[in-house]
Image (cartoon, rainbow, N blue to C red; front, side, top):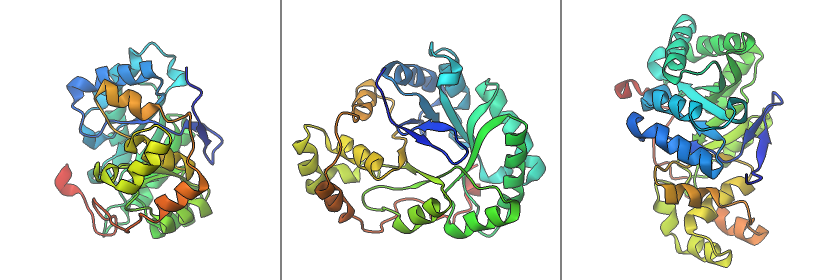
Length: 279
């Protein structure tokens, strides 16, 4: 298997720096996608209750022919399930769909604007970790003020914050806040919905290494210290996304990439997003 990089989380557990995201992959096809990805070498799979494909992820994990201990499975709690008791019910439902004995990482999907129920949700997450049902706990789309709130309330720091991050939206302030807590930054929408692969500067960087623009962008995520979870159901693209461990961007290339930032968010803003309409 390819010797791929890992990130040591603040609880001491190790997580592959490159994983597979399965957002918008149907439950019916997810198991095959997971098996294909694991065959290529992926060892981290990221799903969520709202993706409605946890059943397929679990089937793929169980039938992939790899020891469960060698796979890192993440899922997320949706916005409508916040609250201490409700979190346990939602977690049990996710685990039933997954058909797994434990999760490697469980995330609060969004803080939910206008509510502080995420604090009680975080307390439930801490309990799930104490019970061993979840190995590591973290958050997604949390802003610095949300991080401070849960750490101050519980004394427990998330291991990871999964956020929108791509060349057009590089999130330097939030990455710095994460780093201040020793929280790993994980990137969703790492290619900026595909728009960033069309940028001439990125194509020029990619050509230097004999790589595609998408590969250059994914390598950039690794080189700035982030965890990245590109999504694809296409076997060819899955292989392409995984073929980024044989090169690194130069300091000059990293400077050029940094100059592409536009502070241009492409998706929902955690400061205003409730997400109840997604449920």
